[in-house]
View 1 (cartoon, rainbow, N blue to C red):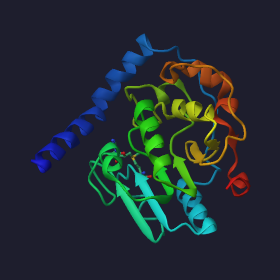
View 2 (view 1 turned 180 degrees about the horizontal axis):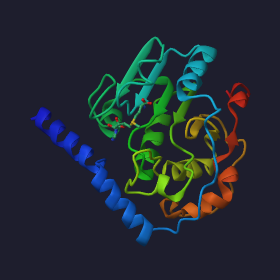
View 3 (view 1 turned 180 degrees about the vertical axis):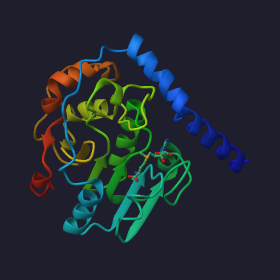
Amino acid sequence: MFQIKNLIRKKILRLKGSKNILKLNFFFHKYFGEKNIGEIGLNFSCKPGKKKIVQDAIDRKKYKSYLEIGCFDNELFDHINCEKKVGVDPYSGGTLRETSDYFFSKNKETFDCIFIDGLHVYQQVKKDILNSIKSLNQNGVIFIHDCLPNNVFDQAVPRCKYIWNGDVWKAIVEFRTQDYVDTYTCYADMGIGIILKNKNKNKLEISIEDFSKLKFSDYFKNFKEYMNIVEYSELENLF
Ligand SMILES: C[S@@+](CC[C@H](N)C(=O)[O-])C[C@H]1O[C@@H](n2cnc3c(N)ncnc32)[C@H](O)[C@@H]1O
């Protein structure tokens, strides 16, 4: 039964990412979605990649446990060298064939370093962050991939491009307004969010009731302030 469910899930995922569905969604966003206001001009080509950023943190902080949410073909997961590694993905890679929600619903372990890279949709990322905060050791770090989209299509939901960030950025903006966590975005590898379990040192003062309603145009105008952007070289001063 589990195998059949998993097969159906995989087929749906493949269908959602198929060329024709992406084209259809692109057409929908272009003609009925938010106006295309151009590129922000973020360029990640000379910046360090996720493998270096995560492994450096593990080595520097002597972290003993690593959790990755969304592993795909294990590009990052296999690279990471850490005493305990857990990888959660309902379709491929990692060590557990589960959704992040199911994993967290029964998890009793805590981790030093958590990399969130599962379903790139605001509501799911928010849940993954909240659950990760509960499962994070006090001096640990949560990384969140794909926080800096360059244009409206990179972040449009439903997905309309093969290389896609989703609206992960909205979850980062929301956690920037919370007192109990300190949130940054490293200008590297599609934008790597960083959440620390410390008092917020640079709280974002905006009053928004529903962060899912934020528009790409808000991000376009305010991304430096919203995302609290830092360079890779600054990370060792943060944690
Ligand atoms: C961008 S890929 C991950 C890439 C990987 N972290 C790496 O760096 O090599 C996203 C993955 O998230 C997985 N995913 C989708 N929904 C998920 C969920 N609800 N819980 C956990 N993983 C999920 C997908 O199956 C896919 O493999």
